[in-house]
Image 1 (spheres, rainbow, N blue to C red):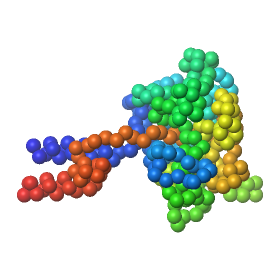
Image 2: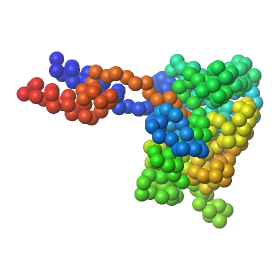
Image 3: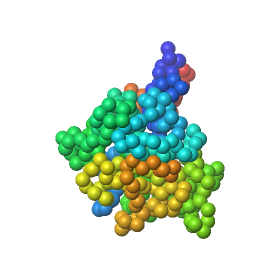
Length: 329
C-alpha cells in the first residue's frame, strides 16, 4: 500500500513542477516553456507597466514547433496573399522559425488556443485555409481590457504587447535595465556553443554579421529566465500603440529584440524612439520571428502540498520521504 501511495505522490509532485505546455499529438507533439513575470511591481511610468502576472515564452518559436503546427493545422493562408507567400529561410529544428508574417504568427497563436479549448486570440473572417481569410478586430466588449482590439479578452495564449515584452526583458523588480542581462553579466557576442552571450552584429558593416540565427537557448539566460530577447531574430509585437492607437488591421507592428543581423534594438531605450523598429504586418523576412506569451497557469489545490505553502516542490517531497521512512522503520 505504501508503495502505491509513493507512486501517487511522485506523479502529483511531477505534475506540480513541470511548466511546459504540451500541444499536438503523436509525432507532431511539442512542448512550449514559459517563465512567469510577476505583477507585484511595475515601473512608475513609461513602458513595461503590466498589472497582474503573465507568462512569457522562454524561447522564440522554433522551426520544429512551427512545422508540427503546419502538419496538424495546414499551412496558414489568407488575405493579404503577400503575408503567406514565403517559406523559412533558415532551417534547423531548433532554429527560430523565420520569414513568418504577423498574420501567420496570429494564426499559430489561435491554434494554440483552440487546440486547448480556449478562445482564439485574434479575429479572422472568411473561410479558414482560403484566400478570403482576413484579419479583423474585436469590438470593445470582446477586446482585452476593452481597449486592445487585436486580442480577445478570453484568450489564454497571445503575442506579447509592447509593455509585456519590455517588462519580461528589462524589468528587474525595481527598475528597467538597459539590457536584459543578469546581475554581473554584460552584453557580449556569443558563438552559439558556449552557452554564453547573444547573437547580434557588433560593428556592421565593418565586421561581418554572425552566419545566421542559432538554436534557441544557445546563449545566456536573461534577467527573467528568457533567452534571445536581445538577438537571434527580431520578434513581432502584438500591438502598435507606439505608432498608432487606431488598431488598424494593416497598421505597422513593432519589432523588438534586434536580430543576428543588427545591434539595433538590443537595449531598452528610455527615450522610446531610437531602438524600436516596425514594419507592415504582412512582411516576411528571414530575420523576423516571434515568441508567445500567455495567461498564468490557474491555481490548483494539490493534496501533495504537505507544508501548505501553495506549492508542490522538493520541500514537500522531503517531508513525504521522511514521513514514509519513519513509517517503514
